[in-house]
Image (cartoon, rainbow, N blue to C red):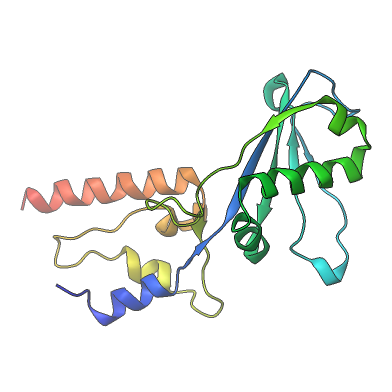
Length: 179
């Protein structure tokens, strides 16, 4: 059956946002960057979302990963995985110089934009619709429970928010079955 209006509205108020992760493998050169750092830069106001921010050499491995988000991520992803990796590499090169291309081995992208199980990366609350997460998290007739990062409370849009939301729903289901 169709969901009640309040529940469907809550879902509609939480569309999926996109954050593309771009893991990029290098040949061991560190490019003057340190391990486990967040690398960001100033972006001109006219291109506020056309950027790629990086986490460098996580746990000492020879890769870094870029993060590209917002509407720009959707538009760039539509051009294909190669375009996403090329953009990330160009942004990195603009920051650290041509050595980035010299030491670059390969890059890949997450497929969250077209994965039928995600269709994005995380819920992006529509402005002015703050109550949507709470409305969505309420069960229907103690028989249908909703869980996921969208209902992660203070950890919404995070994996641990999804886990905690799922654990809470599971406990509520167990409790409702014992009645």
